[in-house]
Amino acid sequence: MPKIQLCVGDLPKTAKFSKSVAVDTETMGLNLKRDRLCLVQLSDEKQNVYLVQIKKGKNCPNLKALLTNPKIVKIFHFARFDVAKIKEDLGVVVNPVYCTKIASKLCRTSSPSHSLKSLCWDLLGVELFKEQQTSDWGAETLNKKQQAYAAGDVLYLHRLKDILDKLLKREGRDKLAQKCFDFLPVRAELDLLDFDNPDIFNH
Image 1 (tube, rainbow, N blue to C red):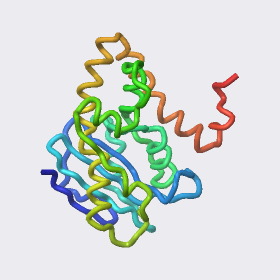
Image 2: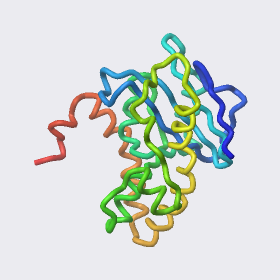
Image 3: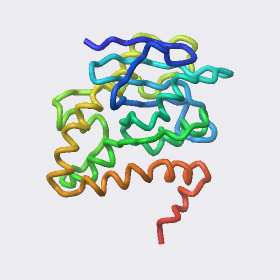
């Protein structure tokens, strides 16, 4: 069973991570400029989960130090949004980054879906329930269902990464994947400058 710790304002100093940490965010909506960051979820390989509520006026020094630690890989699913939102609201560039969605699109080209729910079911046999996805993440107190949902978004990322790494290497796309991951902070910056529509990489 995962151990879930709700933290208000910052990650506790006692939280320790080795070579990698799974990360996700919850916001008031999907508009990078309009909708504020409410929650940052973190999980280690042993299923210790920290849910950090982002409060106005709090600087989150411990969380920022982890997100920018060059020795710890931050594993996301659809990192493009999370990295941009963290930069917009916390003012830091997350690095280094790994994205399970990008990895899946590069090595699972036979699959029509690369959502986290699909990956967990296809690769792990785990079913995720998304009923709380659009709940009020800005609430002063998060209920148990919200906490369980938020934890679920990071609990399986380490295992998914291990499987996807093997598939990327098998298909000879591991180096290409790394180049994509390295580019994500730049892609996030372009999104924050509204260079997502039109995309400068389109014709």
